Image 1 (cartoon, rainbow, N blue to C red):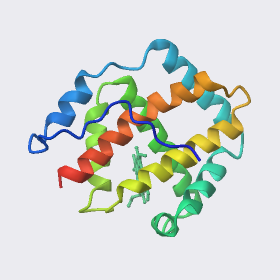
Image 2: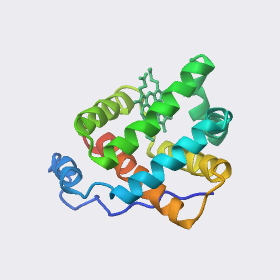
Image 3: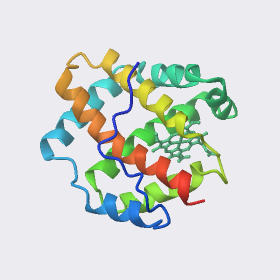
Length: 168
Ligand code: HEM
């Protein structure tokens, strides 16, 4: 099982400074061109495999009954669209694409305790399900790709967990 490796701990003693997480994320270094290229090529290979979204979805709903309930209410194609969009948002965020912070703020609001009320461990399930899926499907999978993907998704996931914990 993949564990989410967080690049740095953002849990400071000063959690009353709620904008700190935004500042840290804005100042953090974007993915290098090399890492971005590795990840985009890997993602393309996975998307070309017809079972990428079904497999990711299967692992995600298999990760917890609670998570499965969130997806139950949507038709399957919409569930796939939600999962594909979640990957795209995380990569854009790590690349520091214009609008990425604002878009991630909207995702954070949607997933917050007031709306979807996601528990922090659901993000670990997302991460494990995704990493397992791409490691199984990408025929060029290696340690370098694993690091590149971990770097690409962990910033956004940590951001969402922090936002959901402290800015309600
Ligand atoms: C890993 C980071 C995640 C990102 C970046 C992300 C991103 C998104 C985005 C962009 C949408 C809106 C899709 C649309 O256009 O309709 C969405 C919706 C949704 N996400 Fe996530 N998500 C993440 C994790 C999760 C997790 C762990 C769950 C577990 C239950 C989840 C459950 C949902 C559900 C149920 C919706 C649909 C909400 C609705 O339309 O009522 N997401 N997510």
